[in-house]
Length: 175
Image 1 (cartoon, rainbow, N blue to C red):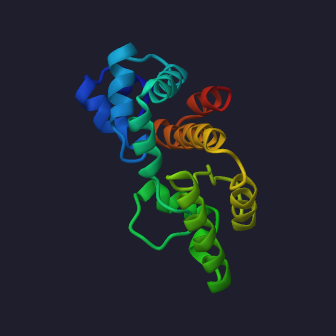
Image 2: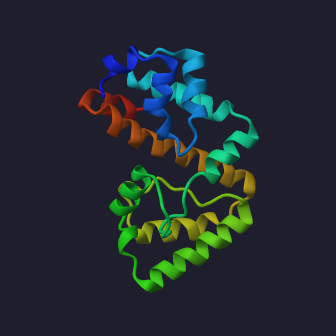
């Protein structure tokens, strides 16, 4: 999809096209469009989506975080999550790595009330395990904000994939 197409979309069509960028949380795209749509640049889209996410209620944000699958989990996931985790090698975990990640994910979720979230593009499975081990010591408030920031990074990658084109990618990488 190109920005010229995105600019012409109705609110409903915008939510249908962009809503998946935030895992099972189309309310983010709906709120962004309500506040600022239609959009003229990918940077406008991204900034307004982030604003909408951060302006959501605590329950909405918690629901957004809880919509993300465990990293390395062996459950049904969205196509975007499958591709992101595959790119980080999480589809090729040894049994020991799988058990380690499963244990850490369980501990993390019990401690914070939502799954561990990390934008895994460009990371290895070792990076991911190291990140969860270090972040598990954070306070809930720190981790809530860190998780939302990671959701924002994931959104950049997904928007880049959706909008394509080098110009849009450059814009989003500098946000």
